[in-house]
Length: 112
Length: 115
Image (cartoon, rainbow over all chains, first blue to last red; front, side, top):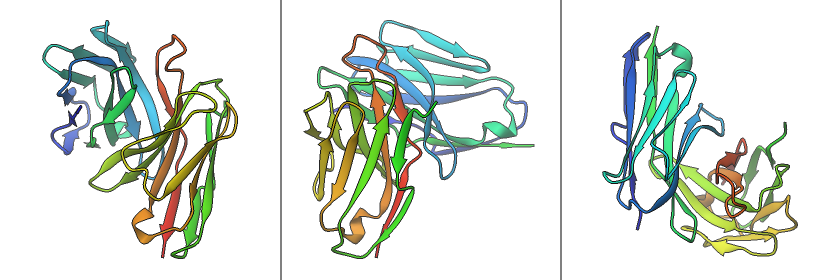
């Protein structure tokens, strides 16, 4: 059974800092990995999707990497801003049954 | 760009009442999903539909039924609501199985309270 872990559960950083959010998974036979952002009281917004054959994806100040062999993904946020404050979740799509497994998320607070 | 639309956004029920959460997507996706999100539990899959006319149980299907009415619409029904079903419900869709990326798109959520 796939398990997805995101540690720590919460993170607070000063504005301008570059930061890395980690996601680990137990079954490396994944189809893709997706990072989401969730603002309080809102739905999940897709940030980046990495297919199993890819190593990384970039969008603006965000860069996500994937290392299947070690069961890890990182989301790098450059020059963090208060507007980046939100919960970040990763999810992996595994196997022929297309089961998507979510981590519990990292709640990020960027202090002005 | 409507994407995934859920109704209602908020609902309060009494124990034993029934209700249906509606979901529609306009992205021509084959796959649709219903999740619930609870503090400390994360997102858990209730039911999913890989294509029109098919539905499958997810991680926590008890107390729920679903209908894939057509390619656009996927509804979730609570036949006899219980306080344990107080949660935020999310509908999602993806193009998984259509030789595309499998990217998942979510609705804004439906906040259900069962008294």
